[in-house]
Image (cartoon, rainbow, N blue to C red; front, side, top):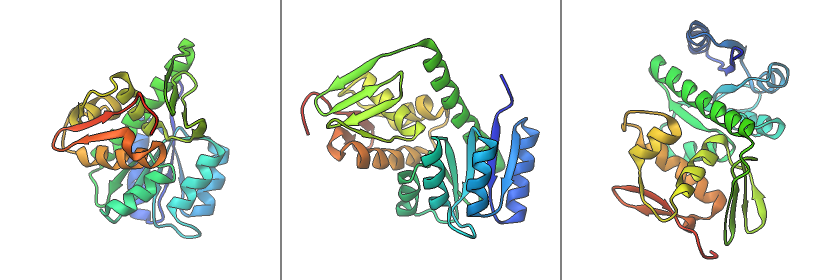
Length: 231
């Protein structure tokens, strides 16, 4: 397999250098951008497999960068934010980010998040290569696993790679409650259950796209996909 390419977009030199250096040591081909316009331009020329993107940038912010690059080509985005505020996080997920880290963060955790995003890219590539044309179809909701496309009430909706993985896993057992820890292990590839808020934020973003009533919350446990009737 060829070396995976990562674009790091961070205007603070100390943080940007540390992130780029660590990812390079991990064996990735790393490109750097320092502002919004530069990030979009570099994205088109380097075609990265993952983007590590700060929210606060000169030119225009990370949310606008994310909108623009996702319009060019869907790509996993790990967003870096200085605010641990759910509203800000959901905005980031809503414009196409797949995951987020709140500053300050441990470099080891960033590397693990990037690796998890790349595993989802690899699973998608393996599924596409296998020729799997499985389609899951219910009233008002259709999921094409091979093409990685989703329709709600006959209108196609754009899901980030992580949102699609989350929906696909929930759809394996409709009506069955899956714990946050189980979702973390399967969708994010994390063995620890200490980041369950990540699941909650992604479920909230997914609900905004497919309908709130389609993902049922069982408080203190997890989530279940509700299908079988129009909503």
